[in-house]
Amino acid sequence: MSARIATALLLGWLLLVFVFIFAPILASVVFSFNSDRFPTIPLGSFTTRWYDTIFADPEIGEAARTSIVVSLSTSVIATTLGFATAYTDYRYNFRFKGPYLALILLPPTIPLIIMALAMLAWLSWIGASGQLWSIIIAHSVLTAPFAMAIIRLRLNQIDPNLEAAAWNLGSSEWKALRSVILPFCRPAIISAACLTAAVSFDEFVVAWFVSGLNKTVPVIILEIVQGNIDPQVNAIGSLVFLTSITLVVLAQVFFISRISRT
Amino acid sequence: MTEPLVILSGVVKRFGDFTAVHRLDLEIAAGEFVAIMGPSGCGKTTTLRMIAGLEVPTEGEVRIGGRLMNAVPVHERDTPMVWQSLALFPFLNARENVEFGLRMRGIGAAERRRRAVQWLERLEIGEFADRNVETLSGGQRQRVALARALVTEPQILLLDEPLSALDAHLIVRMQGVLTRLQRELGITFVYVTHSQSEAFALADRVVIMSRGRIVQVGRPREIYRAPANRFVAEFVGRNNILSGISRGDAIETALGTFPAAGLPAADEPATLVVAADLVRIGRTPSEGAIPCTLISEEFVGATVTLFLEAADGTELKAQLPERALGDLNLHAGGRFHLSWPADAGHVLAEG
Image 1: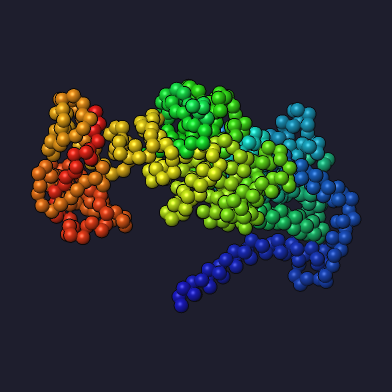
Image 2: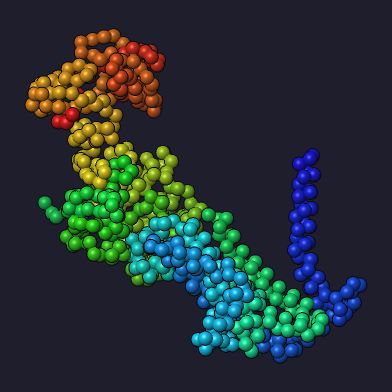
């Protein structure tokens, strides 16, 4: 009996935690469909007006396109780099491997503002600031460690003889990489691609510093908020949230399902 | 005699300061079933991996079919292996696993499929061709691994403790499958194991290794009845090992003097090995029998091994058919008398 009460209490607590996390986002979604200009209760009537205005706004459309290009490019570059470093770690033993791994995993531990300033300084020094690909480079540096960590987890599960078995059956090292390592890592690679795309799509600080005239969606949101209270922000925010949560859920589905299988 | 298929000559393998294999010489004939046996760390797997090209010898030569293989990469060797972990590709189904070697050789899809299915059927797992390998049982996975290695019709098959993950009753069945396959295909099998029963049941010739060296090569029966040295006598079978001094036609040990053939010159150290299954055990004293006390017994079904202790603490073993135990009235602490026929002893010329 007391066990059942304890379970009920724990479930209640869990529910509270979820409410605490998701209430602000839910509020933003609710207000994005509210006709009133100010986010107050009682609510006004239902409207899709704010969505209509953001879709009609060329500046926001441009920012969305920039964000999509940046996050897709970042995803490809960061996942490739992440796979290469994870495979190096899996396959080879060498001196200074510890420092090598530490260096690779370092970027996420650097405060974003420091990272952003450093990126700006470096990119303008090499004459590459304010370009679309400046953001792509910066985001790739920022997200590659996540991709590496995910793919490395997958490679830790591999039977150490699997690659050698492929060589033994007549495949060269490149063929084995393509026909054994890549298929084995596929779920992790897809997860890493989704996750790095999501991080890049949401990232504000670095993007704001290095983007120049190529504003991404988070940068536009800040500009709108700085001007005045505008319900459009709720509409953009809801769409951004939807995009990110989709990517993150996809990453989870591909990865968690594989981990629990082995 | 035709040239051996595999020749290892003066092969040394060092990993840093550790020498895994010391100056190993071994020839394996075409169509021979050879088992390399030894305790873990004896260098048997390293030797197999050098044949496959997964390790490069530090010194010496590996030749297969007359060709020097030291610098030939793994994928150009055609020395397929059945791995201890099986190493099946988890993202491929059973048939695709078997097709892998053919795919790497650029054989067309239809032909690949035909040959893979043929092999799966030959190993009686045709019905599982489209199943994910992770859903198959241990025995079925074992057969997929065999089919995958044999589908390219190699001259040699390497097996690295392939049965160690199976249940006891499956091991015996798979031994039958392996023996039949090897006879039918007429190709060379090199089988690495730490299990005496597997090595003796399967191989034409057994190679015993210890600490990176070959300590005896021979037919299973020769090794069992005539171990070449103390290590083999201890490692193989259940032997009573008594060190002593040669007296010409008898050996003097702490437990008494026993007549034996093949002894070194008088006053040289020698060791008498008596297989436990040749030992006679009785309740009553007799001429030359060793009095001892029963410590424990190991019952495995048809045979029972008795562990006894002589007055000076020497451990002795006797192996009997279970049905012969009836009138012995066994109980720990019981007093018995051990003896053996004069021709049962095997002499080693070492102390």
